[in-house]
Length: 332
Image 1 (cartoon, rainbow, N blue to C red):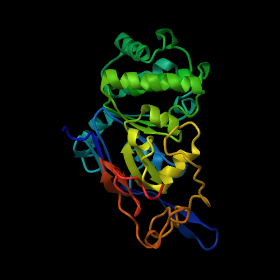
Image 2 (cartoon, rainbow, N blue to C red):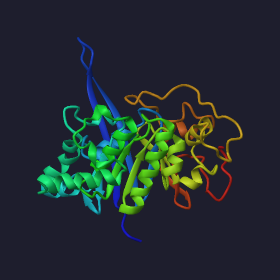
Image 3 (cartoon, helix red, strand yellow):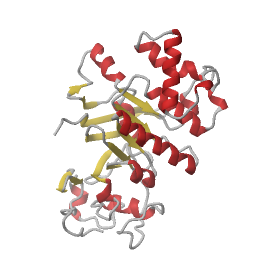
Image 4 (cartoon, helix red, strand yellow):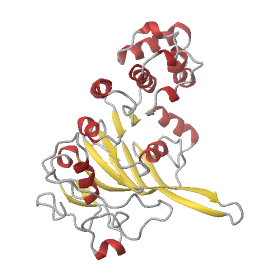
C-alpha cells in the first residue's frame, strides 16, 4: 500500500482570551484536543459533528491559516510544521481550501479573472494571454463559460460562485483540498450539482478531499470514510458504508444518525434523544467528554478518557462499551 497523503498526529489547538474588566482571567478553550487522523491518497474523508466541535478549526489548521498549539501535520511524509519556509510554500501549493460562503471568499472589487488568476500570478510565471487562457480552462473544468471573466462576484448565484471557487482551488493543480461546508449555503438542487462536480473532478484529477459538513446525507453521498468529532476530539472513524449501515459504535454517533431524517439507516429503530447541551469547551467534563449526555454511561466513563481504539475492520471508536464490528453493539 502507498503511504497516506496526509497524517495528523496529536493535533491540539488552544485559544486563549481574557475575561472580566477588573479581575482579568484567562479563558482557555481546547478547540482541538489531540486529534489523530490519516487520509489516504484519492479518498474523501468526511468530518461531522455539532457546531463548535472543532471541524473548521482542524481544516484551517491543516491549511496553515490557524497555527496549532502542538502536534504534527505530515503531508507526503513531511511535517509541515517543522520544514523550512521554502519547502512549506511548495507543499502549500498542493493543498487548497474551498470555504462555506462563496460570497465572503471573493473580493467584491475584483473581476472573476483577477480572482481566479491570483494564485497563478503569485506562484507561476503565467501572464497576459497565457494567464487568461489558463483561467478559461479552469472555468471550463467546473462548467462555467469563459465569457464571465470581466464580471463580478455579486452578479452570480451561490452555486455559480461556488463553482468559480472550486476553479480557483484547482489553479495550482493541488493534490489535497479541504472543503469546509461547501454546499451548506446552497439550495438542495444546487447542492447535488456541486457534489457531483466534486466527485467528477476527484476521479479525473486524482484529488484527495477533507469534507467538513453538518449534513449527514451529504457526507454519506460523497465520503469514503467518516470521522465524528465531539468537543475537539475524534470519537469515531469508520467507512461510510459501515457507519450508515447501522454499525456505529459510539453513542454520540448513534444519536446523530437517529436524529437526521435525511439518512436512512437500518439501525433507526427509535429516536435517541440526548439530554442537555454541549459542555463548555473551556471546562470539559472529566473522563469521556460525552458522559454527561450519554444514555449508557458507566462509572468508568466519568473517570477515564477512552482511547480511539480499533474495534475491527479499521473501524475505531473512543468508547468503553464499543465492541467488535463483527458483533452486535451493546450500546445501540
